[in-house]
Length: 112
Image (cartoon, rainbow, N blue to C red; front, side, top):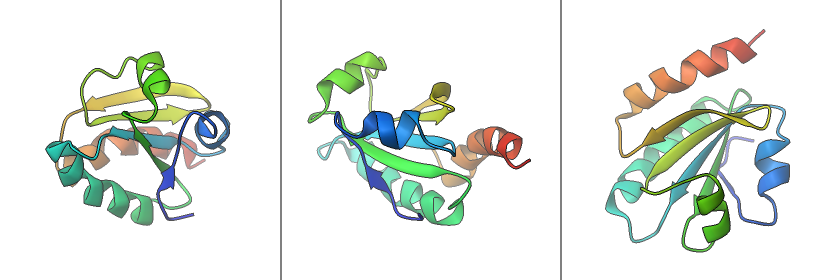
């Protein structure tokens, strides 16, 4: 469960909204420089937080309806879902330590 899951219009509800653990969704595009810079950080988090966090990637160019539904206007956008609800939204590139700081406050609440 440590790998990043590719999500789309077909599997988004099952993989993200019905997940037993919080899910960080990386809304990205292949042509986006900051998205490419963030990708290895997102993959590291998937490995390090395995079991506590699921990490998913969603290509905004191939999934315009989902991007629109969640109001994604800039990429990269990271949205953390917990129990099917958005609990945190981060826009733009950020260092791993800063990203982890935003995530930990939501993950520690699930560690009970």
